[in-house]
Image (cartoon, rainbow, N blue to C red; front, side):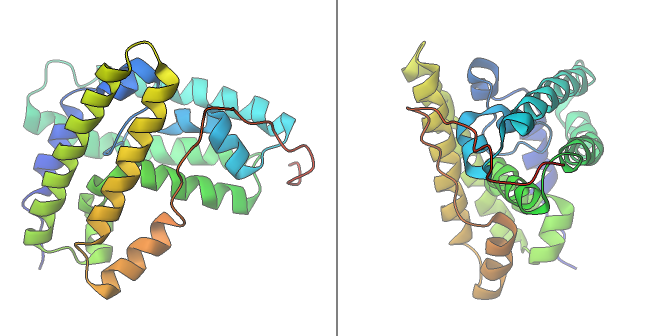
Length: 226
């Protein structure tokens, strides 16, 4: 059985603290097993999903509620050591994800939900490959797990440097952070066998690279209202 020796270590790295990108720009980088629903409030994501005005308003409400849930969940990890934080992150990730997706399904059309799920998956970056259910689906080996964990650590360091370099220009930081996450996904996919890659591609969908410079306007008639 291909049990991942690197997976809990990677999750512990994630849980050891909020990503600097999340703290300073409202984004998390690779490894966002908890969190990520702030993305639905981003104009670029709303444009990608072709949300209408009513959906945009509801999406902002979901982002606000799930961000509060994220902060509450992270608060539960204070005072825990790395191993305990990793285990707690795994425990909290599932319910957090299900709650957010349940809210989105109440007003988004199925294709919009599916695409957002792909974007959310991409935003988590290569570390998603080490989550137990995904690792089992992909049949990740220990050697692959170690390399993915290294990619994750490298991406986080690059994101931290990008946020610091951007200073007060949060828009530039957001674009750079998401670009690093997308690049990490591509590199991680290169570690997979052809069969694994086909499964990974199905899970992540087409790469999402937001261009936030000009913002986005909701498409009133693009999708049916629920």
